Image: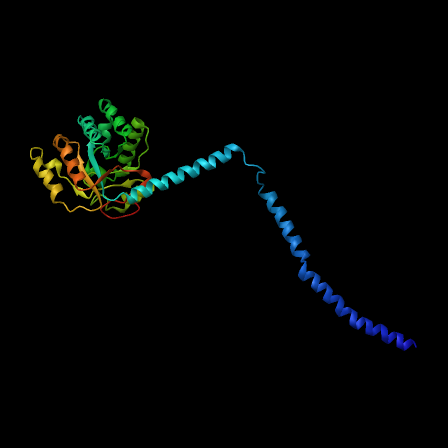
Length: 287
């Protein structure tokens, strides 16, 4: 009798233990308590280390919306620039000068804006500063063309960046703008074919603009027809940057140049720091 009871008990245990393990395994599979607890502890730790404001105040929301609006407007401006078709940039070197105001009069009369590259030694002359302010006020861009325009100082003595920074500082002082575009006197080649100067330019975050068409206006003070000949014979693409100077002969010819370019189907662009176009003789996109 005792043996039978013992045998029954053994049989019950043999069948019960696997059943208990099966139930435990099933519960863990369906409801992984340990994993949930670990996640809960991790979430609590993260929340303590990175507390989030329960409610964003109105000032924060307004600031976020303002930045988003500015970003979208900048993207829109860049897209318009890309889709505008044939664009020509009139650029004038060596100002400000006694003719700057007259150049601005012609541009305004024809509804055109331009990009001016001005010299520091001229910017220092108080009698010329009113026209520099006016140029910016009327939507033109004023960039730097060095302090001295001296080849040896700029390139052989490697004063290029320091002179450009001085000139840009003068422009900021006069106009309140903070341009970063500069035009190397005599062009970027071969003057900027110097790794030391190049590294300094990149570090200073300056942008370089050369040109695609040289009007050669400085050569022909008494032969305006030869200046027009340059325009009429130059191969012209969808984007052109024209080099001119604040010279009397250029001023007299400017209405004719504008009319010619309009007849060729060009729109007139003005440089924008926010939509920089690479335009240097090295085709270096860092400049």
